[in-house]
Image (cartoon, rainbow, N blue to C red; front, top):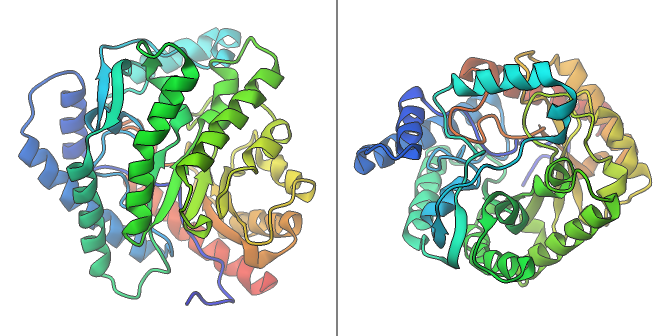
Length: 386
């Protein structure tokens, strides 16, 4: 039972992958032959290592760091049928306003050995889930890593993407209607959603689409059309979660895990009502970055249900600054004031630290320092609030 005088700490899922693992994923992503047995062994070893690092940093609710996946949604191309080919996903709308930044960003990405989310596959056939064995192996590895630390954690979670981000990033070239494609993805993803919860783990649904797509696909369209998209995706998420206890599910929404101007981001207030209609027990949102830190106050007007929590992004995942624990504490205190109950907040990160293998900008030593600061800041806030 969690200590009622403790603010629990967690994060958004992905954690730094070892260089050898990144190299294997990056080579496979460009169709080079890799030893799949070696890849599996490296992923398993990395999973055990990141669980140990999370314990040492004081994280209460850890993940497997997505070590056995090449990227937060691209891994599904190996767990679902119907995907093939490639297309170029458009970049953020803001890049047109900052050509110097856009060019520097392009050069920087080109120099990395990494798995890119910007040239994903397409749906060229009927989508169906085929990855039962891989999913079961990933869950089993994570649970074995957790078993080495009995009593050290309050809970643990697995991530899976929302049907919306998959539908927007993996272009539909098969289904006659977008709605049909989205529904097929929902049916397939439900298998992973249910498997995580059935295994005794929490489920985190990663849904950057619910904010990010405003300045990608919907950049030139009225905001009401984007809100309608958010409502449609949340409806599908709710359908996928039918029968799943909502206290075992959390929803992560963000505006894209990259350092950039972000001045075309949709305001949280415009989408909050649609997002909060999700039938989940907790919402995780980024409040540590300079563009959205002020939006904590939105929760003064958009109230959570009595049984729901807010996981506060109190650590920025795109900067190597290590937050001072007092900064973390202040962010949590502002969140408690906005929500109205300090017992209904948890401390988290804005996003993952390596959402696509090799794309993370922070070195591992900085990541662990940031998570230690998260723990220290949560303890400061708890001493003042609980």
